[in-house]
Figure: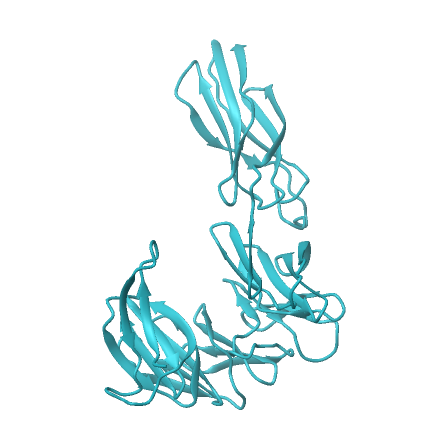
Length: 379
């Protein structure tokens, strides 16, 4: 029944080291891990019941332990500070990550969630449904009452990117909402879920927000939302067991979702971009145009790959040639509608042999290639 921090080889699962988490040196009391686990610099940090935070090097050496009030629930790291919240406490602690020394304490009037650090701000929710944003020196920047939820482990139903906060309302009237706010607390808009759906902790992946939802005893699913406001699609799980609120993670263009304790789903874009209507015309220069889209993950780069008189292949970026006053949902090149890209090639007088093809790469590395076009040009 002792608590340990264990390091495993990620390739084969072999034990590298384990460190016993003791509330004090040679203590007889047991330590029970109660927080998330984070890596900050070259140290691993974790919190336990009884209010202890442990800092252990990646070599398995205990650096320090620090006691705060309550049971440690959540840790976050940013700009050389470790932020700590605890259960049955209304305080947020900022600790020095190298020594454990207390740098400041923010005192609130309600229990606080696990912190999120972004852009010199510590973002939390509280037990009264407020979003609470604190500066990196412990001052309250703003607070907004939106009925925001957290789970029983004090994880807030909030996701943050470089510009926006996405927060799920779980209190008050139905239907529920996902709010989009800027980092100063201004509400930009919201997405409304279907009746009787409850949202979980959202995930930000570039311009797409993934929102897990649950309708109790009926179904669970995930929404894919463009910039948190517009539904691109949804995926409903066909569970034969009891339905749970899904948990979602994403990395390197792949999305993983645990829909219940025994089911792990993987979403991935397996399709290459669609290239249509490649055209070339001769003006004072060669102008090449192509219509391209990628339904699953959008376009990352489009290139014209060309050779003049059997030279080595040159890679020249192509730019989108038409833009609208309001960007379409999904952005340019994301969805089923092809958007035009074009570029030009300088040519000299005389007879030239031109060969080219179009290369389109989506946001996770799938690529499509047009057929090769060849022209003899005389000027």
